[in-house]
Length: 204
Image 1 (cartoon, one colour):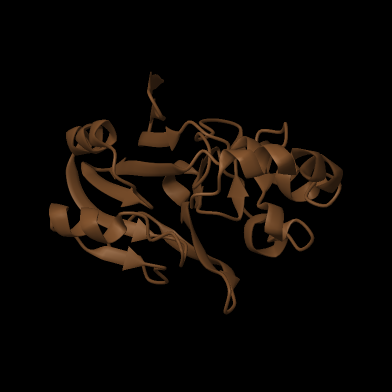
Image 2 (image 1 turned 60 degrees about the horizontal axis):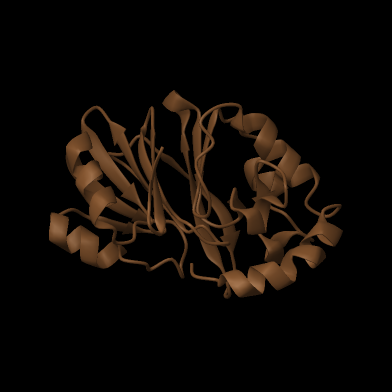
């Protein structure tokens, strides 16, 4: 784990994750499969992008949330790779897209990497303090009354990559199911955390 002013660079078995050091802990990932690197919901950070380049050949950028524009388009154009926005067909990648939310206000797709038992979730689940509320992971504050259990509880990931917070590198199955199981019962914790969350900002 390498910490720099404002951003933490987390190296793990599948690549790298870079995370902003604030309450929302905006995170992006570079995941490598057979020498090909897939950038997921990336935002610009010179050190992270250099580290991603060292992992292998850039293959594509995936945007998993409709409002997670971040720097996906700019980075895809600069690298000369396809941008897959809310992909429902991720052919050529190691991922299987999983619809998580589909309505006028919120569209989100998760990714399941079966070979590595890795689940990538942009927003519905996070490991940042504002999501986890003292646990390893938690449901997005706006989804706690109706969490995406049907969509996500069928998976048993070893690793969890979230759009907010550090990656969980092992034992993610227990963290995911605890998050879903305590979504509503943790609402009092959420209420107590709101003042801190508001001070910490809400970048997506």
